[in-house]
Length: 325
Image 1 (cartoon, rainbow, N blue to C red):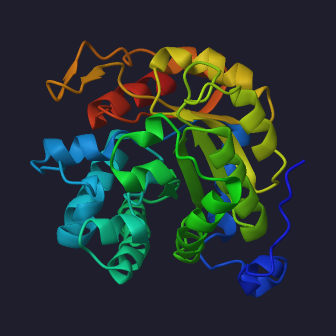
Image 2 (image 1 turned 180 degrees about the horizontal axis):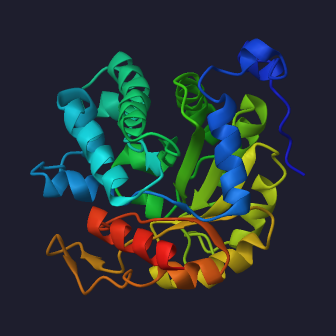
């Protein structure tokens, strides 16, 4: 069993998570409702935020990816969330995936700008959600350490960092996103057992609702470890309300559900099925996500949507499939 006790250097809230004031405002009934919805029915997530921003005319080729627009054009982030809500999505995943102090500093910004961007990402998604009424929820994206490096290492997971080092790196923005008042922390695109363990440990100390989603290959992590081991560790944390995978192949639904093994409701939001050609710097092939929603539900999914290359139109088709069902 991992050692998740707070260390002497942990901030005070990690040693007092049972005190009422330690739970930030903004969770309350919304989170409870989302957790209940995940247990009782299918919840529709949004699609590829960056894909939609590019379709709206934005160049996201710099190292901050879509997070740059949190600084430069925040209204476009809100508008993109609205595009997915209009398509039928019930959950907006925030633009905070690529936001970290170290990543912002490497891109020539300040740590203060990173902290502002984290809080702003939740506010923009919340404003979009409130414009569409209930049920609409906000999941604050917590991307992997590799996203801050902007070198694709989140799809390898070979950081060479210990669980304790990963805990220390993730801790500040987990705290800031929790305080920003999202309904849930979406720890996503996690490539390794070590990083899943680090996040589970921090979530156990933080005491706010979350899901942990691997970037899996079938029933394995990107490092080749059994995904079931990562899910077993995460399931030890009561506040982890769902487990699953994202940024993966759409055909992996059954393998992911099998690896979760009934420990939690399954969240699944894969890529479109196209492949990225690194030499040509373009997507190739044909998306295979169309018509999958009913099959994913049959495989055990309770939260589904899309990641890279999944558009509002595709989310609308999923909504139609679920309605027909």
